[in-house]
Image (cartoon, rainbow, N blue to C red; front, side, top):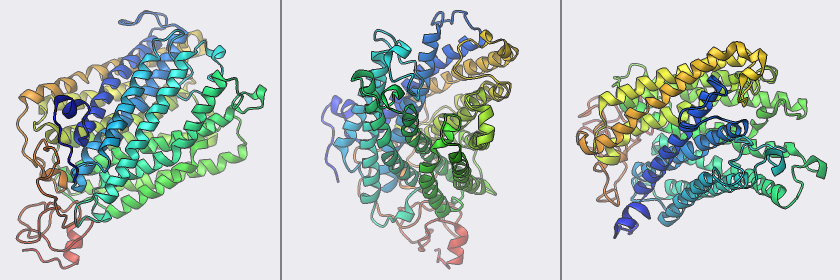
Length: 578
């Protein structure tokens, strides 16, 4: 057990090695960056709805400023919101609790990981205010646009952007090492790998994917910095380089990165759905194996982003095939989640509503992704608003709906208080309505030929006929941003006035509910012992409708160890139940 009890305010709340404090630091830093990313989205959408009209709170948007806003919005939402909240925030807070240990394997490395990430945040924000302005080369920074400062008029801003991304990758590499080591080496006594909650499985597999895929992009970033500042020619065709090489390096990481974000979101859904449906997860082992297969396939799909970039057309078919194949393991996971809901005693908490909405919205994103995965269809919709709609229906459920579900679910554990249910419902219904109002029209815009990254659609006569869709999407975006105010108010209001939460308010079975709310330093008074799988609900003859992992066999608890915790399997195994 680690002995690093805090001795001062700074050690307890700022430079803490406690995994729970670090998890909350990641989450609230990510939420703060989400406000910045949301403001940039408001400016961008307002410019598209009324080109050339000054935007309230910003002013007139030039073409260069629009390019910088698009770059920063995408960068912030993917790297500075999704990664710290989903992967690092929930992962840091929950993994030690779920496996029954007091902290991460390397607490000081965990501390270094957060402050490296925080430094990357400072560098990114500084890149917006240096001479020449922020990077306007897109969040993918493709050469030749990004390889030479003269092409964009951006010098130091883009260099700082590259440094910020590199620092963030270093931070999450440190975090990934910690997650994997902790989950493997610090599990509670009696907890085998098949006793791990699905959230832990998803975080570990996501960390492995990140560690295996990020190296080429870090190398590409260093090569790009050298091209820009040392006159090398890695990506300069005139100097014998290849601009297309950077796309391969970027997307070899960039597409697995989507699954690095998706897997923790699916892990959150697993924990919320099983508790609120009062049923064991359907197909626990099938989900784990499907996730492993998806992780392997994620490394051989990247070139579907490059169907019209000039790559050899003979590569299109195999990458189309792998793109379609990778949808199979995720379809299996989603159908297992739906089967978990079947005939469950569902409790419609706000967390459950967000979890079910995530399933529905993400399915729409996945189905439209198959269209983009077909080389023939992608030629028509590539770089159009159809793609913008697709990836927002994929990423918004991952980056926001799943974390909202997790935050409403574990807020009582984080702070020992319940969130206000009425404000939660307002937040949920407003978010879902305005999200669809914002992004559904973009499918129509894409099919009409509207291209993305154009600051003034009216400058192209053939795009003017779809301007009403741009305005409708903008009203949806503004409404979506406004409806996050109840969530922010709820967080801080409930800290003082929320109903006190008991240790296990949702009557869950995993070890995170075996500690007080909020957990003390060190989490457990004594090291817990695991006696069964993570999801034991509805056991015939049991004292209650759930049996926690740490409850010893005896009156009201089954003696058989069944990883899935499925009541039918327990009965088939002849498990004696007192």
